[in-house]
Amino acid sequence: MNKLIIAIAIIFTHAAFAAPVHIDLEAPSEMYRAHLAKMTKNNKPDHPAVAQALAWGNRLAAWLDFENSRRSNDRQLRLTSTTTRRGIPISSPSIYSEKTIEASLNEHASELPGIMFEVLNGEKFPNVLPLSDADFVVMARKVDRTYQSAARFKALLPWIESYKRSKAEDVRAYYHFKENNWTPKHFEKFDTFSNDLKKELRFLLAELCLNSGETSLGCKRSIASAERTKKIPELFESLMISGESNWNKFFVIPDSAARRDMTWNLIDRAEIPFNTPEHERFIPYLRDNIQDEFRFNDWSLKLRFGSFANGPRLKFEAGTVPHVDRLGGNNITMDSNQSIEEYESQWIIRHEFGHVLGLPDCYHEIYDETLKAFVNYQLDTTDLMCSRAGNMNERIHQELQRVYFNH
Image 1 (tube, rainbow, N blue to C red):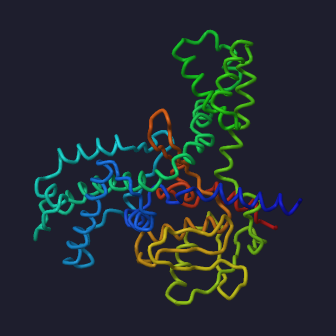
Image 2 (cartoon, rainbow, N blue to C red):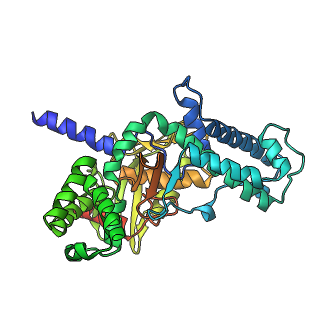
Image 3 (cartoon, one colour):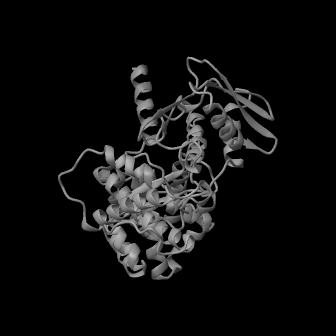
């Protein structure tokens, strides 16, 4: 019986870590292209807007390859860099659907220069760009972002039911109440609130209630009952407890993901074994990125290279979405088609190593049945495990210290 319980716990820990489509929210277009190429073919045609956005994105990628093939390294056109990291804050989530993709395409059609529009629709590549490099990159980024929305929509669509269920972990109501300092005492005056405020609070309480595991209908009934019996303050207090527990799941290293091979006995440094890569050139790639990222104030993490039966290791696979085999796992698999010199690869190895240490992703994605759209956001855009705009921070250091210092 105990073995069965442990097995089930491992399955659910892995399920919480591995979303149906584990592509981070700010993944580059190349990653989407690789994923779509591996998807099972569907006889059902894409929505016209989705199909057009994908076609434009692929045509743009080919154009960039053509243009960059004629340029020196210092004049390459790049759509991503450390300066373009923007994040998707919880207060301004990304919302995408066939409708929003179609609206973006219409906007592009109205502002794209004629030659650029024609090339995206199949005309041959010009010998000279129709815009300055800077202006071309601005327009190209807009087209590329719409491509990414369409590609993500297509990738997630087969799993739509799972993303509907993910609504239960939506943290936005909890975040709203926490950020605005709501307490049970505020709800003692519920009867005196305006009808508009009451309506808003009923909606937010119903959203918060989903974090407790209750159904949507059950939540609405609980709120109606609490309002009728003047128990809204008590209900709010109870729901905030389950909301906080749900929030913490995005940041806390689960016991099942804590490593046993990390050494942290001195307050200012920790050490972890890492299997020496087959090719020597990957040693500085790992060392320079991971050791550069995982430091805070006077504390630093050091990789100890060698041969270990149960240590982290770096693997490469053509066209794969970079990933770790499980939370707290050993196998970091990267895309062999992506240069390790690229900013994207360097950010990814830092983020994925966080998973090796047991740190979960702190972003979330759902399908909103009211909006009829996918919605995603990052819980903290300054955090390495949430966003490409994030870095190692005090929160991560404290969590690593809680789990690994003197253990």
